[in-house]
Amino acid sequence: MEPSILVIDDEPQILRAMKTILAAKRFRVTTAGRGSEGLALAAAQPPDLIILDLSLPDMDGFEVCEQLRQWTQAPIIVLSVRDSERDKVTALDKGADDYLTKPFGIEELLARIRVALRHVVQAQGTPSPVIPAGPLLIDVARHIVTRDGEEVKLTATEFKLLAYLAAHADRVLTHQAILKAVWGSEDMDHTEYLRVYVGQLRKKLEANPDQPKYLLTEPGVGYRLVTDI
Image (cartoon, rainbow, N blue to C red; front, side, top):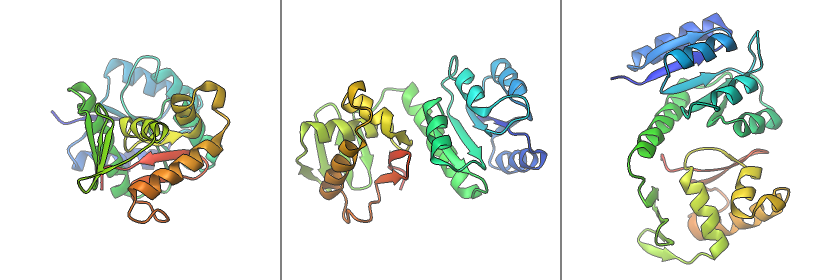
């Protein structure tokens, strides 16, 4: 059965366009113009993925995201004209899996949808202890990382950071979420730790550390380990 997508947006032209485009790609599409309507539809017919606008007429999109996360783990991709770092971080902290700013490219949106749905399938099955990212292989169980077949020596903290990013591959992770997971809640304000260790990882893993392909910076928000290349 085709994956189902719920689109929550108050712009009728966006809803019409999304329904046409996604249906052409063999998705089953349901639309809602208000946050309360979207929550009701999500509860009545749980979708495989949710596309959410933040500016809704009856309630804030952050609240919709937070309420959805109380009972569903369906991926949530935020589409919004709001492009501030604060809004992106807040959406991700409220449970969104990804964030695209309007206007957006259709092919980029479709790629983000494919990645999100693929991770759902992987989570439902037996998670692989080995995560590929281009020439990199990250063996979480054995604490081994190879690049083009050659083992890369990492410190314990470098591996812990990379393993956390790999466990949430292709998703944007906020600075605070990474710091809490790797260093603990008492160090959540020390973003300088991240800059240093991400820099060290890039030197060891990227062909060109100054132009990384896999360990990407989301300015003002956090980092993303890209595997879908």
